[in-house]
Image 1 (cartoon, rainbow, N blue to C red):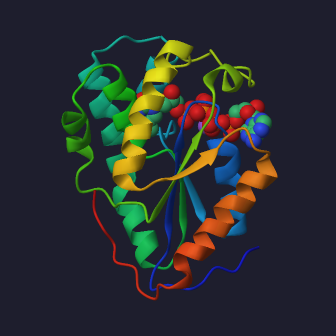
Image 2 (cartoon, protein in one colour):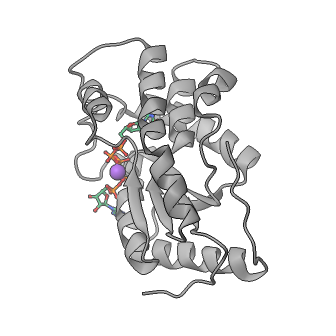
Length: 206
Ligand code: T5A
Ligand code: NA
């Protein structure tokens, strides 16, 4: 287990990126190293999460606006719990978060500002890692193609929006084609550097 520098509360780290870029793999390792709670979005364990999961498997059709709002509501379901844990000094690692919501819905043509609105007020991650790489290679990874967003032309559009958000929101970009260990090392290194000159971190909202 890694010792990270103590701040006045828990650290909130988000992993974002293209499908099959390795977010879940890294989130699991990182939460063990930082003794952090792991949360995942969509959280498929709630009633809303089950509806979202059905949608992703192509089993129920709804408008782009409606599914967007459900993804956001599914984050709001965890908001109080995340906030309390951070205030109690517990680190949180989130496997996807609000930026996935924006990237996937904006890639369908919904306006970016409209997409951001329902997540406004959620706790903002302290550090967001963005895992990305060539879609031709990521699409070779296990299980790719099972869910409705896993097709190359759509992933390409999602990548373009993520690239835009990465610049605006100062994401730390990671080459998803590196090995699992190399990526984990890079993530830990960046967290250490980021905390080096910080003693207090304010909780910010999206
Ligand atoms: N979505 C999500 C929205 O539209 N709006 C929203 O608000 C949110 C939150 C499901 C979909 O929902 C969309 C985005 C998605 O299309 P999900 O549940 O996160 O989101 O999807 P999953 O299928 O669970 O996750 P991904 O497909 O994105 O995969 P991961 O987590 O990026 O990748 P992971 O770690 O599972 O690894 C995939 C495979 O690659 C291998 C792994 O062993 C695994 O086989 N792998 C590597 N291989 C080589 N090198 C590496 N460095 C590797 N790392 C992992
Ligand atoms: Na995942």
